[in-house]
Image (cartoon, rainbow, N blue to C red; front, side, top):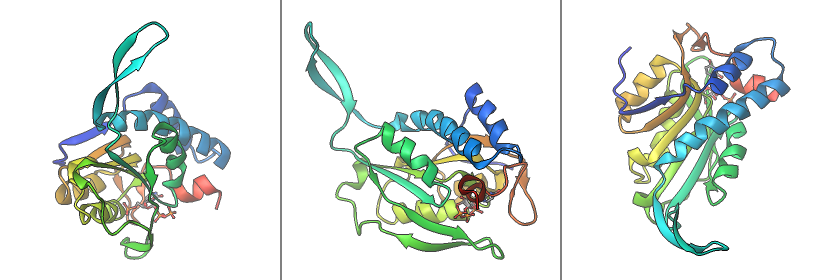
Length: 218
Ligand code: PRP
Ligand code: URA
């Protein structure tokens, strides 16, 4: 399936491959599943933040003054985990970006229609400087792309430039990437793997099953 996403990054890190193998295995328990997801998330996320704007700053080392680079203090950083499964990513994201604000997005996928159903949204009515706002949407699974597209739209509707929105997933289906690239071709997508396809009930093949259930032992 053809994608027109300009900014798609699929990890080729051996630690990601190794831990994807762990979480795909149906015999992996929730404790091990979470530990492996966290290892993958740390690697994908450190790459995802490469678009943040830097500004110069002077600091004095114990030896001399020098010019360094810091993340623009004027940039607004938003971490947006999609409930439930995106929650596991948010601790890592905040560890790496302690100045970020966290906006939880409550969406679940209706099992019959496969359409996203919103149930929680505490986004502000507007962002004071949308052009200098950077959003990191966290959701381990991009399947049909319905939930991802709905989450991206929430921020697009608040005038955040699409190229400032990064969607971070563990596993993506070609169908979901095609959907996102059709609606938001300028979005940044960082993923651990692109799988083969969806099955007739909308699950990613080979995938890992239901990410939320495996993570939260439900
Ligand atoms: C999963 C996943 C995504 C969505 C992906 O969530 O975490 O949010 O499905 O599917 P889509 O691309 O077809 O929309 P789910 O609805 O199972 O909710 P949960 O995280 O609360 O289990
Ligand atoms: N949601 C999941 O958790 N897994 C899939 O394969 C598809 C949607």
